Length: 68
Image 1: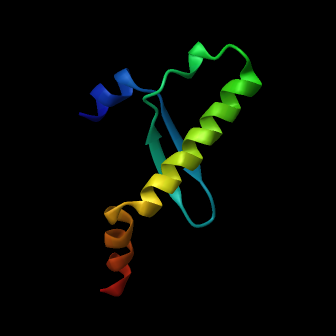
Image 2: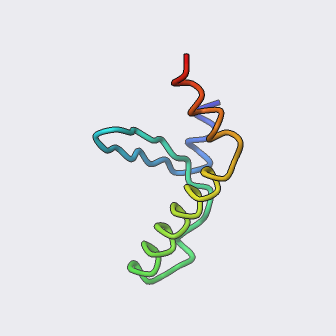
């Protein structure tokens, strides 16, 4: 299954001191010709992704992991 996803979507790994996040990028950013605009759009989409996760039940469920 991972091979199928890799062939369909480019993957990106983001890493900080506290988090490693593997992303499969579904949006086709090549449609945005200007590199700076493409980057802005991608960063905006990442922020939207985080905002959506914050509001989702999964974020609370994930935090409960640390209760055990």
